[in-house]
Figure 1 (cartoon, rainbow, N blue to C red):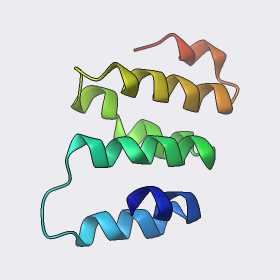
Figure 2 (cartoon, helix red, strand yellow):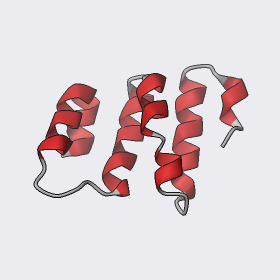
Figure 3 (tube, rainbow, N blue to C red):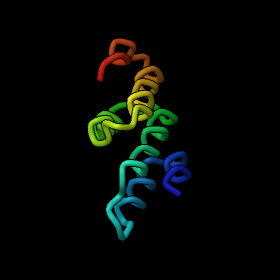
Figure 4 (cartoon, helix red, strand yellow):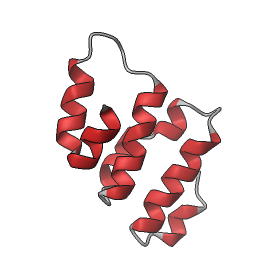
Length: 80
């Protein structure tokens, strides 16, 4: 559900997550990284900083690198 809403609009997806009766886990926030890349919203991706929340998931680092690539921020691609 978060993935679908994230593709439609980040605000709608974020409101949905905030309204969930349980605390969202890192997987839920990981879906946001994909939406940020699709919608080229690097600022929100940096605020989320999922790579710091779930350091065991290398996919988060790859997703964040892809967000930077989509925004042509090549200097940031190799940063942690």
